[in-house]
Length: 456
Image (cartoon, helix red, strand yellow):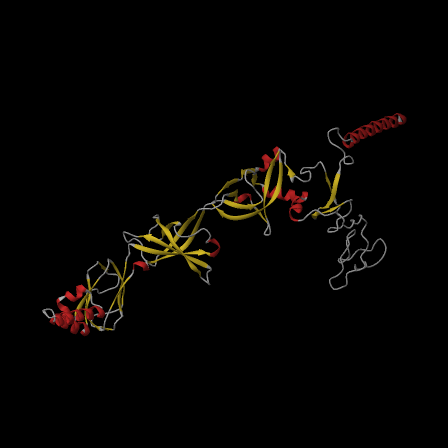
């Protein structure tokens, strides 16, 4: 009985050994469709901690002791010079989207702040042309509206009175000398600043002259009062026309290109939400503010109903038509590293490659490409950062920034068991019962030298 049991046990062990051998052979034998590791061509080995560093044979990572270099095979996705290759299924799973690079002139729309002001070309100053006294003032407060020909003030000027009286006394002169004196008196009145209409006024003989508004407008400045004595040349008041205003818009120095006389603008003011006013740039003033580094664009704004007022803040949108047609890419297609801008170009058949570009201005979600693209290419607009990372592992971006050089690098050190560090403390005690202290080196790890000591 005992012998029979031993025979059965041996038979069971034999069957188990045969089954285990079959399973091991099944899992280790390469299939016909997948080449074995020994049959695959290795392009180079790279350090996982520094993918841009390539080696010509396997070894251990210099950045992380104990980590082995990884091989890069020729048949892997990306295959070398074309960036990376993505299967349609992965492309669908990642949600990759592409856009066509179009060639067009970029139309810029800039929004800048501005302040409304009087149109100084329409301002008129009323001043005293001779010494005198303001006997009457018909305008009592600033910002009163006046019409052309409306009386503003009455100026009592003794010099005008005597000259006007002399001219009036010679009105009936018939002799040649009398007519000559009358002409001389009239010339004197003109020199004193009296107009023909003022000379004909009845009060002129008494020295009282009524000053009238030369244009329609608003009394924006009123610096005198009735009874005040004024000297010749004193500004009595200023009349401005509210039907047309200036808007001074502050344009950043870097954005003035393309802005000039005739540039159309749209204006919004907080006092009239929802309303938009139109205007055009009259001139770009040739001066830059030293504090804000902005240049003033002077804009003429029609204000027939008086809705706008000087001093109001406004938001100005300028539409600057682009000059030269250039390739335009969506803003989301750009990858910026701080030192370089690039896009991922769809080469077709699942191949993607990074491409360095030089960019210009941006507007409405598009950016000008000054160099790198010609138009008609397809660029990746979603998921490009994943492709960029994979292309970085493949070395495509290194070829963009540095020329290829012979791979003559120091051979990586072969994986060896870590030697005990001389700086590591010695465990207390000996024998199998000795335990490492809390500051001992971990088994298999090389401890760096202390910052206070000297590195070997």
